[in-house]
Amino acid sequence: MDKDPNIPAGHITLKEASTLSGYAPDYVGQLIRKGKLYGKQVYYKAAWVTTEDALREYMQRENEAEKGKVVEGAFTEKMQGFKNWLVSESRLTAFFKIFIYLGLALSIAFCLVLFYALSVNIDHSLEQRAVKNIEQNAP
Image: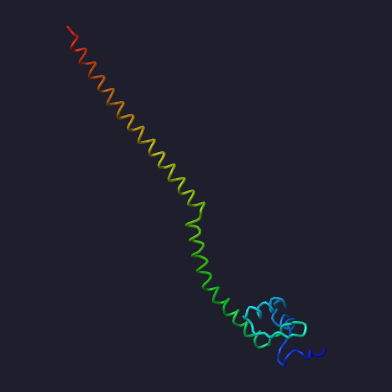
């Protein structure tokens, strides 16, 4: 297969880069357009080309970045999971529901104790009045 005369020496097409890297040709072109990978536009057919060295260098940088992300990412992911667990809406909702129900139960218990104390006090007062009335009316 003859090399296209418009492709500069040492450059490869996106299809060849795809074969070397395992990336899709469109993705390699996207990397070039974003400036993450060296590339040059060949005006014939408006195609992009890159070099094998640039492609291997990019792949090495990506592999190193992924290794760093695995170590750093594991801790960060665990912390994020804990934070999400701690502050998740459903857990907060459940906490506030428990808090409200507990407050309601304590309020009802307090009211019942207060009602009991007042009724005992009133009953005791009525009993003392009755005893006084009996003593005053007794012959």
